[in-house]
Image 1 (cartoon, rainbow, N blue to C red):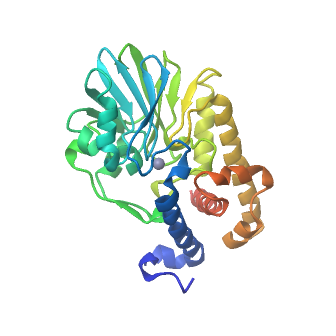
Image 2 (cartoon, rainbow, N blue to C red):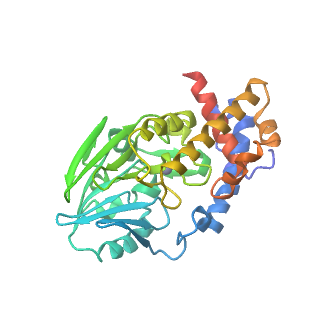
Length: 323
Ligand SMILES: [Zn+2]
């Protein structure tokens, strides 16, 4: 770890205190960044990482699934206009506006499932024309400087027009296009400001980054996220959906309840395995060396590899233990 490139060494008391664990994160951050730069399309088969276009899939009348480069977007169109859940990266905004222009009616609402840039940067242009709705903590985080050390990413405060102008603490109901839309806050999951968006009549739910379909997810422990929290929050959602619910993940293809259950089982199964090894006083490197049991290997082929996932679970369990 002495050979780490200087620019990747982020000096802070916290890092020095937990140097060994963090050094691994720094190394993996580099490999992940390179992965993202060179193989962004691996996040999902149908992503258009370099082309800056959206693929549009019709889900049901009035509902469309848009995949660009960042988080998946759900579009509602109808007599009152357009509403989108999440707004992708700013570099994707021209393509997003082009895709939206194919539908009648202007953009009225943008809902943000959480603060991450791949779900909110589109606000910077779209906020001039639409109302932005999100949980209180999304407002707070977008209104201040944020860091995701794992990705070596910094988010500067957004301008006022790009911030959510309608916020809520627990839940919000919006009636639009003949639909009852419920945004429900889920505490300490992927971050501390995530919401799940239900379209009750259409029976569609946008899970935000509480769900990466078919792959190990990113859980933002630095934003008070928790792997066990994500699993717990999903459990609470399963009662509210049925086998016919269209489940839109934050990343990956359109899904359903059965696959969401499998994702949750993976979260619990892998967290249990890592926790057991931690209880045996095995260091992070040792846990990564030993690895997870074979049944979870396939989840490491999509976005995060197994070693990086183990490091996230490890830091999440450590953070949980401090509470
Ligand atoms: Zn996210």
